[in-house]
Amino acid sequence: MILTKHACCALAHHYTASRRGGKSLMAVALLGVIAVSANAQDDLPITISGFGTGAITKTNTDQAEFARINQVSGSRKDFRTSVDSDFGVQATAKYSDSLSFTGQGLVLKRGEHDAYTGKLAWAFGKYKINDDFSVRLGRIAAPIYMISDVRNVGYANAMLRPPTEVYAQVPMDSIDGGDILYQHSFGENTLSAQLAAGTTKSTSAGTAATTSIGTVAAQVTLENGPFTYRLARSQANVSIHSRQLDQLVGAVKAAGLGVSEQLDLIDFKGTFTAAGVIMDNNNIIAQGEYAVRKTDSRLVPDTTSWYLMLGYRVGKFVPYYLHGDVKQDSIRSFTSLPTAGPLAGLSAGINGAIKTGEQSNNSIGVRWDFYKSAAFKAQIDRLSPRNGNGTLINVKPGYNGRDVTVYAAAIDFVF
Amino acid sequence: MKTTIGKLLLVAGLCAATTPLFATEIVVIVNPKNPATRMFSEQAGQFFLGKSAMFTPIEHTDGTLRSEFYKKVLDKDAPQVKSIWAKLVFTGKASAPKEYASSAEVKKAVAADLSAIGYIEKSQVDDTVKVILTVQ
Image 1 (cartoon, rainbow over the protein chains, first blue to last red):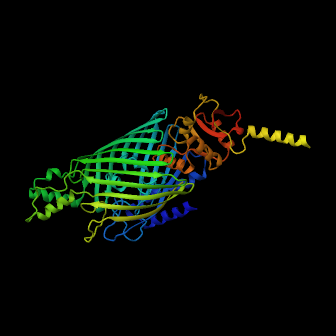
Image 2 (image 1 turned 180 degrees about the horizontal axis):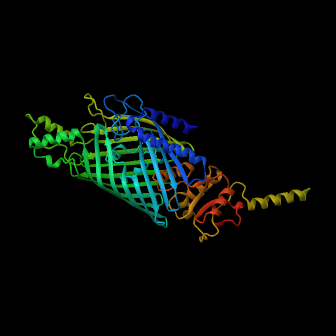
Image 3 (image 1 turned 180 degrees about the vertical axis):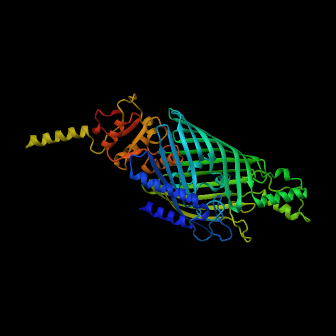
């Protein structure tokens, strides 16, 4: 019943989607059609599963908007569904015991346009070499964060959304290429490792496209009883295609301001190194990540971000507390630039472009497993931006950097 | 009269001894051709949480037997297990176990697959499957 209702919501969103997303939406719809026909014939080695979140989000201000990464608009004082809602369908076809194909279609509000768009989140062929090793080719989830590949699956997480501070640092969702997966159990331990390589592309608000060629991402995970430990590093040669930034850097070069060699836009190196822990012991749940972003271009500032979530399971309820923080490690302004005279405007422009949002966040929330494959969540965030607007977007001149409260409620489901 | 009541009580007592009234005895089963002979509770549990792909878990649909198995072997409740599988499925790492509505069907599925592992009531065991663990 609930599923049907949400499927309808998702369908309604299909119609409001932009023309640009039409093709991908068709792919998602097609997956849905496969889903129906596969369900009809139980013997086919195709399994269909899906997930979704229907959510409403609002804040206590109209002077700035709360959004997730790559969203053009966010939430203000009125309730919006677009920040935290999504819908995904996944199909896996098993060709033999060792060969399978998986595709996942995802509808959410991300990217350069302020509309729900469908995309092929991933599509890969997986070959199981033996009990320990597998290889995958195609489009795979970029293993950048600890919950990279389930960050859109609300049901698989306690929190209503992935912590904003850490999960806004790298906009890449998937890698076109492949990976090698290793998994081995010994005693009570399970060791997993993944090495992925390929190219990735991300289109964000303000028509800036980011391309990373030669992306290499590696992660090692150790599960020991109630504990999961993870170490990961991603590295890429990044290129940013943005007319605005091109013009800005061009003007700096033309004016001979002497900092242009620190303002690479094409083929500069970027790394993201992260450590994480998950604990699920009896009724106590804890999850934390610490991440460092470093690049060779000041236009993508270096950052340190982290969060810690603590929860306590009481029957079907998990109340939790979350603290997150992001700070900039690289310089927030070039002191050598003229602050007066005809070039002052250009200086201000470039000094604005090398800053990133700094903030901390305190959240409380609760997950309630009210139905066998659906959960209700409510979360209140208190964002405290530092030295500016933090991760808030579309900020109006009247906003003075004060704390913003975000209210959200969601129903997550899987099928 | 007295003897009849005595006999009844005796029969009732015997019944209680062999089949406890309040808990079903659960056994973990594999294919008879599977070389495994015994297994610890933790070992069996990891297959039903997707931590190892060496054996293929065969699941029951939602019900009391499944809840009891989750509680006794996995020390988790149904939403927790569902959430763990959601993580595995949507990362493309594993497919959720096939679910069957009765122990007879689970038994049939285990008997048909060399690498399968399942669980049923002890009273349902026959020689089409091999018991490798009795859940305490």
